[in-house]
Each structure stands twice: as C-alpha cells, then as structure tokens.
Image (cartoon, rainbow, N blue to C red; front, top):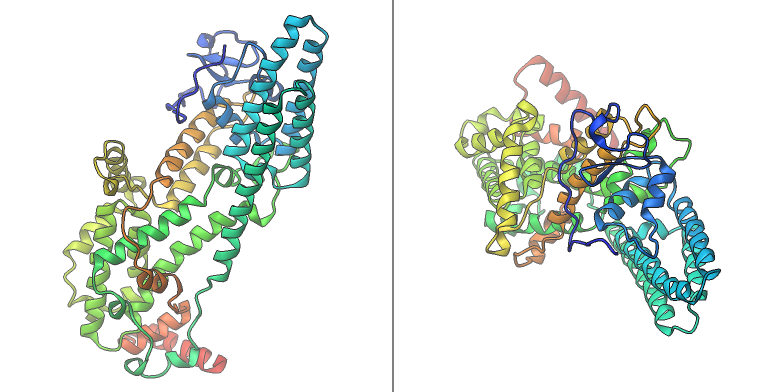
Length: 479
C-alpha cells in the first residue's frame, strides 16, 4: 500500500538529547537498518536510507521522507551518484518481476507507476539536481528502462515525456531569472561628484520619488518576496557540503549553487547602504532629519507587514558609523519609534525579541483572514546562521556509523517553514517607479559615505579629523 502523502510536508521537531549521541535502547531494533522511533527513521546506513527511498510493488515512501532524504543526501553524495544507485535498485526489482508469472507482470506495471511518481517528485522538488549532463543522463536511462517494462502503454511514455519537458522548462526559467538579475547592477556615482556641493546635485532622492513610507515598505516586500521565491531548499543545504569532513564525496562547488544566497545577502547590504547614502548625501540638517524619520516610518511599516529582513537592513544602515556619528542631526530626530524597533531587533539573548516577533508573525500567517496577514520574511542571515549552527552542533554520523537522520529531519523542518513563507504572493500593488529606485539608485562606497558624513557634520576630534583628511585625499586622487 502507498503511504499517505500529505498536501505539504509537515516536519515536527525531532531533536532530542540523543541527537548527537548513541542510539537509545527504546528506539526499537538497535541493530536495524534503518532505525525507527515513533514511526520515523532516525538513523541508518546510507545504503539502508537509499533502499527506503526506492518504491516496491507494495511500498511507497512517505512524502516527508522523500523530501528530507533527497534534500540531505547531497551532503553525502552527488545527485547523479544517488540517481545511479536508485536506477540499479529499480533494475534489480524490475528483473525479479519480469522473471515471474503473469501476475508478477501486472505487478510490474504497478511498480513502474511508482517509480515514475518518485522521479516526478524528485524533478519537481529539486530540478537543479538535473542541470548537469551526468544527472540528466541517469534520469533518461532510468526512464528508458522503465518504459520498456510497459511498451504498449502510451500513457507511461507520455507521462515521462511531460516530466522531462517540465523539468527543462523549470531549469530554463531559473537560468533566465539569474541572467535578468545579472543585468541589474546599481551604478556608483562619480567620486568627484561626492566632493561637490551636495545641494546642487541633480540626482533624485527617495523623498522626491515617494514620500509615503507605507508604499516604500510595500515595495520592499515585493523585492524581498521575489528574491525569496528564487531561493530553493538545495541552495540552503549547499552551505553544509564544503564543511563535511567525514565524507570523501564533495558537492559541486560551482557558483550557481550559492548564487541565490549571495544575491540575497547582497540585497540586504544594498538596503543598508542605500539608507546610509540617502541620509549622508543631504546637505541640510533639517532635511537629513526628515530623511531619517522617513526611514524610521518605513522600518515600522516593514515590522507591521512582517518583513523583518528589510527592517533589519534599515536599522543596520542607520547604525553604520557615517550615519551614527551625525549627532547634531540625531538630536533633532524623534527617536521613540526607532528605539522600539531596535528593541525588537536587539541581538541580546540570541535575538530573543526578534524570535518572539517572528513566531507571532508565523502564527498570524497560519490563521490569516487576508493576504496581507500572510507575509513572513525572516532576517535571512539569522536564518542561515541558525541552520548552520544546527548542522555544526550535531554530528552527521552516530558512533555506529549510521547517518544521524534525526538531525536532518530538524534541518528540513526549519527549511520547510522557510519554503512555506516564500510561497506567499505579495498582496500589495506594484509601484514601478519606487521599485526601480530601490533596486538601481546609486549608492556610495564606505569611503564616500564617511566623506559625505564629514562634509555634513565636521570632525569632532583628532581621530575623525585625521580620517577625514586621509579619505578626502584618497578619493580626490582616484577621481
């Protein structure tokens, strides 16, 4: 019988005190392979875990197991190697059924349908596993062999053909998105321009483009969700592969595997730098005060929406040294709202306040009555650090040599939460003018930010004066 396949994977927390230790006596068959606890696989040899992945006439793995194993397997072997193993096990079962009676041949057709279903789930959930020639060759080889089992059945051929066509379309779409985003490169202003009177600059600023903090916050949500939509489970798992010393197999290290993570990290840095640029480039103190208060209002709207990544980016930008040192400007700012936002993102107690707010947003999303209440955008760098810490804290292998699959259940559970959040459609209307500004407006380098800051409010001590002179000379020499 095929096991029940839920509409979406549900991953209860499975980590306990025994996660990185020995298999406990109450876990059933101590020497079994794999080992179960409460109906879930918690450890096993790589071979045993692969065997549990492959369907038989009377068995189909649970969807949560398929997803978790396919996701975590790349830590131990390349996808094309796993495909080859799966193919060998399929062929072995196929040969056994072909040698049997007519009844076995009818069972062979049922087996073929299950293998096709497994391959469909694999290609739909992890299409990038098939972007290299080796994996695609293995997939087509398995498909060809199982098609031979039921050559008279046109449905089998049609299903396999459609599966491969959908896979190629998916891979093409991902590749095109990367190419489009590569062309969007924010230009840096001419360094000589920074040294001129900022009041005479013809460059637009955020307030001339949009003076409504709600609209800016909504456009930030659009940008965040677009980038989240192009981060995939395998991207997140790739951060573990280069640091797994126990395995001779190495995941591929080509840049496409971490491109989306790096692009999202670059986006966070852009938010921070854009905020600092918008503040430091303003010549008059009164206007700078207005810009700071505007971004505080934008940050508050980000918090209300559930966009914690942009919120953290704005706060980080305001805390950059070139902005933080503008004491005369800050003395005119009404900081009560900013203080509250900083409290929510306080790093103490492992960002305890933020985690409480994130949990509240996640619960709101689950019971949402409107699309606006569904948005949850976590602080991405913290999310990455959390799953990386989980990986480092618990060994991937138990003392008996088994893979510590309980660890990978927990990592996958956290990644699944992230995948649920990223699938939310942005409920706000797009404003192309604001979006374009946020994505392409020129931003200052770190050096230029300091120069602009010193020009706005002069150095207050010998150290700042020395820094200002050195930076000014450096930039003038480059101009």
